[in-house]
Length: 211
Image (cartoon, one colour):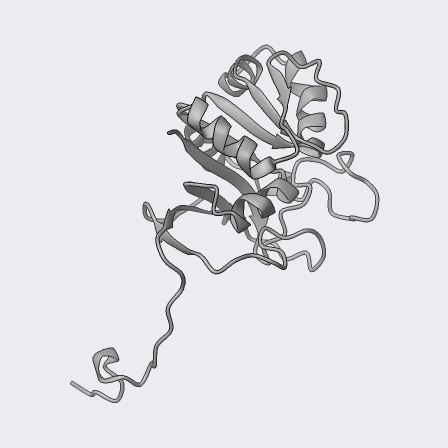
């Protein structure tokens, strides 16, 4: 069985909608392209490293359409070569144009189809695709979550964790890294169990101690 890695760009208030450009979805969201002013070489290198070993892409319909209109026309760069060469799996209830080479639409049983994709590949990358990500979070169908938190608050837009997210434990896989422009890169892995609770005044918390 392979691994499913979610790659997400988010604001400080965890809005993940339309980081790439204002023309991706212009209706009703005034901050399309919010990530562009915050990019730097450190963050770019982190993104490139995150895709190392990827042998399949798992995408929601909107993200797929954006990628399919852009990446097939790009010939330079490691990410272009990767995205154009690996299989692409599309989660959609409609009939997407699958003319991008290597594209396949998933069946109506999304959770089951994703499990089949994971069994077929070693490293499946999910990029953006917030609606799809909500399903993966609810089903705990991910192994790693790479989250780039950017130093900006928007106050509107689709969030990484929307209503209906299930209680889940994750573990930090490596120390956070901040880029020169203030973006913090966090890499989490799915952990067993559900969040616990406790009393901060319990003796083993050291409450009230002055030594």
